[in-house]
Image 1 (cartoon, rainbow, N blue to C red):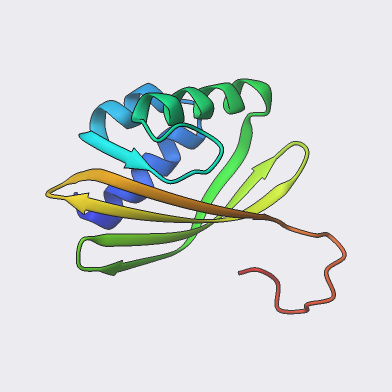
Image 2: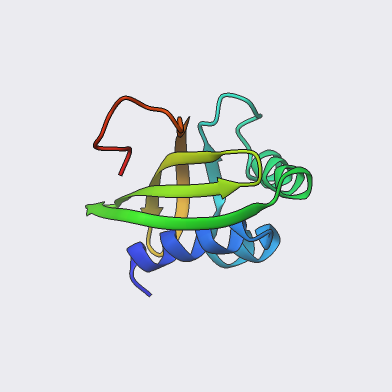
Amino acid sequence: MTRKEIAKSFLMLAGSGQVKEAYSKFIARDFRHHNQYFKGSAEALAKAMEDDYQANPNELVEVKHCYEDGDTIITHSLVVKKTMEIAVVHIFRFENDKIVELWDLGQPIEKDSPNENGLF
């Protein structure tokens, strides 16, 4: 698999509630993340992902754009939940074929946005 395929597969698995499988396949032992709401460990983020999926499962995770620059993959995705739609950017840093670092930024999609171009 290419790094782009790994990043997309990670998002699809984790986004469909298969967080443990996503982590066992694609996350490096020394993984760290930069989500400000949770401790920086792989375990803390995995638990948060599992808890979020149980409380408010994703109905859809669709990667709209995917970019590669050296050891970095950036995805721009649509995440649909029952209560909202979110535009999310994930930045993955790789070592070999494992994700060693992750940043994520999300923005709820406003139904009545004045911007005719949308978020995608």
